[in-house]
Length: 305
Image 1 (cartoon, rainbow, N blue to C red):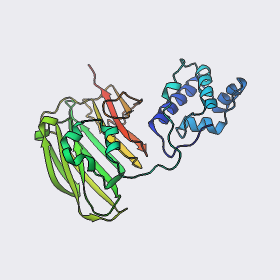
Image 2: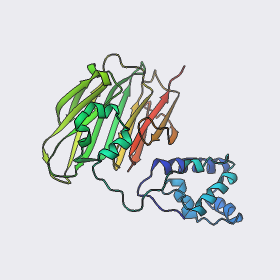
Image 3: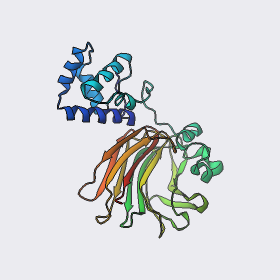
Image 4: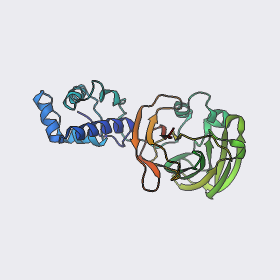
């Protein structure tokens, strides 16, 4: 009826969150939900409902979609609420972790993006000998609602012999005054492109990597003295890293009224998934994804008026 995913994609996560919240609001157990479906002549196993609720799979086949339509009635949801959160079918088989090519890059960044304009002739080979295994980002927002610094720690695997550095690109900033500080790895060439509001930097490994060898880099990007008020931060992912952590830290005297995590298929595309997340006791919010699919994963927040 439905098949497990290798990872929790944002489409399955969006459906899971809405399904889970609706079940909780109605005060029903999954077994009771299964019984109500059965009363309408729709057979869905308890395991399948549990997979849907946890984002391990999503409904795809006709019988499953009929169950989704019935669930909207059972859970007192407007027609189409759950159906609209079901994403496209994913290919069967194992997710591969090969380095992205030009087509994949343009699927995420779009045509003539700032990233492509900043890299120029190097764009088709943009980190083509590396694939990300884990990405951890910490974003510091100051008391004036401005992004002051972003610290990134990333583990990569070489997809062929000879990888010597990773190129990192940050845009939407005052490039002329931004600085890059390397913590792990050696800082190489840094190019500031004020006309694109973009910084391009190379983090060198110190020696060429062998195929399948891993490397860790860590760096901090410090924004200039007068960055604009910030209301979102996002990471463009072209492969499926095992783990992506985005951690946004706010000052206690400048807290947002709400935070949301979101996903869209490429820069400039409409949101495919959005979910509210809370602040913790340290005035921070975070999102953690496992084997997230290619696309744009981010966090947005709203400031008090």
